[in-house]
Image 1 (cartoon, rainbow, N blue to C red):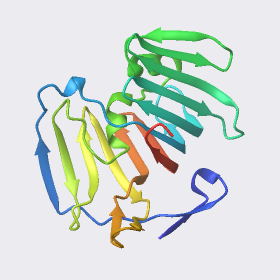
Image 2: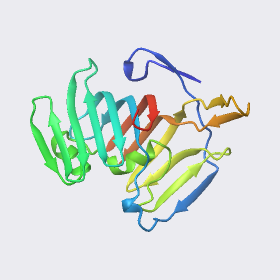
Image 3: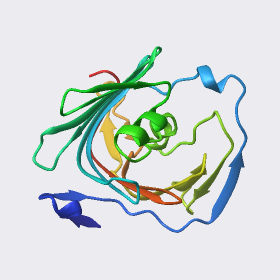
Length: 207
């Protein structure tokens, strides 16, 4: 399947569509999960937010590490709308007017300043198509075992498409290894709020 012109932006991107759910599992919280952190990554994409006090449509640049996050929200023309920085001290949000706001958590801060809630603590897992280990979740999978939906913390995350799986060959053993596919198109919903996220570029680690 090929998806073109999503969010009325130019470009045409290969998209692997997944099947309908055939199995649902309930996953209980893991002891000590609050201290566990997903591996570092960088992603570039586009987001559309509707249903909140305010809406948003534009670009997203996100750098996640084991010590925090830095997210840049951009207008459709590439201008900075807001910068979100999370570290051990809390969360800071700087607007395009260079006003900086602080809160203990991302959802409270984004709802107060941007007019919609960004579920960052769950999203750092959901963008990998895995549930957060901190709270109970329900996970739907298709016949191939691919995650097609997660319900957690009052959110429902639907995986509408994945990057194609990549096959690489090692020079020494001449064996082919298949890298797992990352989600490309996600839909996050909770009562009164909907977030669409398209991931255009994904890099694991701090590169």
